[in-house]
Image 1 (spheres, rainbow, N blue to C red):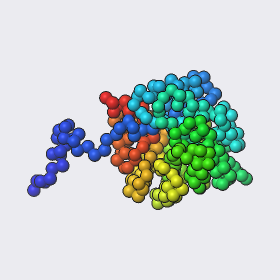
Image 2 (image 1 turned 90 degrees about the horizontal axis):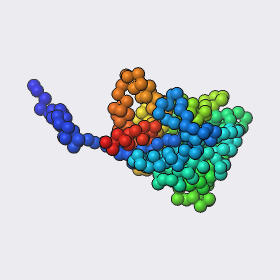
Image 3 (image 1 turned 120 degrees about the horizontal axis):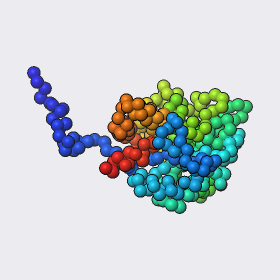
Image 4 (image 1 turned 180 degrees about the vertical axis):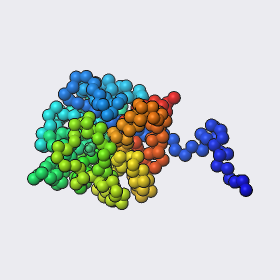
Length: 322
Ligand code: PBG
């Protein structure tokens, strides 16, 4: 017996294949993370993240203009301050590195500027919050997150993205924004943020590895899918406008689950280690970089992400324009 239903019938021609394509990427899907370091004068590269520059603040305008013409719509800013201290004061200073970058980018482009809201890049101990007796103090940290949110919004951030995984952070930040006349600023919450080894290259760029201990006391265990969904539900109840799953590729099941349970937009962060893996294998000639990039991104969208934060954003947008 030969099969009557031949799946291959619809795969035989390019035009038909295009007609039945279920998931299409668009440059508007992407957000490109950008790093600004207050203490450098020229672009710097990090070994584990080929093609991802750390920019001096003086380049912000130039970068914004280049990206505006590349077709991507949004950036996510991370700052590396000149000084780190136990209170992460660079994170909420009016003249902080990200606050300055936001102002410069806004003045030279129409890009949507999202700002990561956390302390690990700003504290001398590298944790995402304030320590009391050697432990991250949840509620004390919230008061700092409120200050950071206000200062990012005052500098002109269009969206704030809390990534520190403190309990109650979304509600606290919502109130801080509303009380400071920023009720129009959405919160994109890093809600399902797993305690992942795939953040390694990012921590090299941001010099944000914790000096003692890991982040398992605040980030989600990679084994826990239900707990990640619960985190997202809580954040939506607290007022999150967008919820995020991070990393993306090892957690496509969580993205899919979020898509089926929630009606808010879902973001997914293809993190530094995911990018580095593809880059490293491609550099060795072990896989085709362009195809692996597009396949990884379309998989994330197919799983259910509306917004994809990726270091490939600019290259992928170029690829889509061809
Ligand atoms: C800050 C933050 C991290 C990333 C985004 N925001 C690092 C961390 O949790 O250690 C990682 C992003 C990446 O790996 O690309 N909390």
